Image (tube, rainbow, N blue to C red; front, side):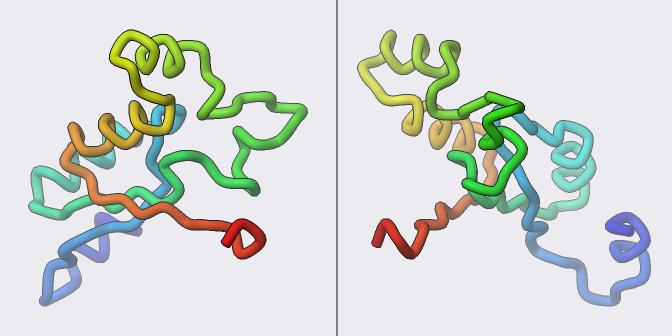
Amino acid sequence: MYVILLFLLQIKPVTNQVELHPFFVQEKLREFSSARGVVLTGYSPLGAAHGLWARPDKAKNLLRDPRLEAIGEKYGKGAAQVVLRWMVSLWAAFFIAVDRQCS
C-alpha cells in the first residue's frame, strides 16, 4: 500500500510513522523510505504496554534485554538511552508515549 501511495500522490509524504525499535528494525522499509527521501518516525521506541514484546507469554521486555543492558553498562547508560541513541543513529524521528496513569 505504501509503495502504491508514493506513486499515486502528487505531494510526496515527508514522514511515515511506523513501529520501530531494536526488536523490529524495519530494514527494508527504512532503505525504501530513505531512497525516496521519506523520514521514518518510530512510535514507542522503548516498547508499549500493548506490544507483542510486552506480553508475558512472549516475554521480551525491550528495556530488560541483556544485550541492551550490557551495552548501556559499558557506556554508563541505561537501556532506554541505548535505544534512543540507536534511533538517532538511524536518522529516524521518534516520540515517546506516556501512559496517562504515569503522568
